[in-house]
Length: 196
Image 1: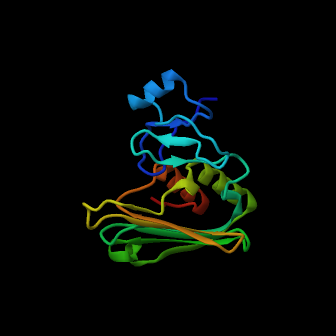
Image 2: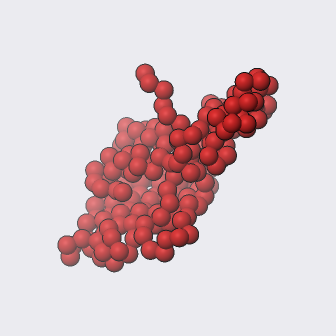
Image 3: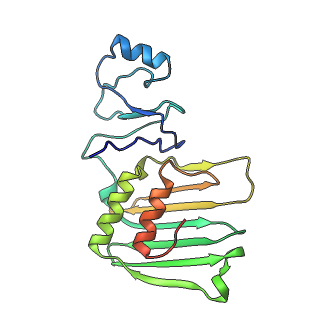
């Protein structure tokens, strides 16, 4: 099986590398100075991040058994903008229900009719969605992604609820997490319609 390419959850760069545990070798130190390996090249604690981005120096990842993904019981999402199509969805595994809506220009119903549908969320579909969230490094997305040079465009928000009652919100404007397209594809599969 091919190795999964590392993509930074913050900036989307593929210039990411595993942070090596222990004291870095002379070769790793030199590679770090050239920008070819993560600066420092070592971690000490089991709580420390395990990956680092060589472009923006963001660090992410935890050791197995500490992921928040299995704790998610509900998820809501929106993507779109006033000048184009917009999509929203919600899914809750505790009720097995969800909802999807597509809107056109100006947040108006598509073709004069609202494209809204209720969806059923099975355990199999939910588990598939959680696996996709894990693969796109969802829990390591930063809270806000913004491109300050663009005023209009695409806005998005994702809110998850954990089984502890805690709510986590990630959002952005004209800037997206590293594996955003994978996330959109997983949502599209869940709702059986477009989400992009």
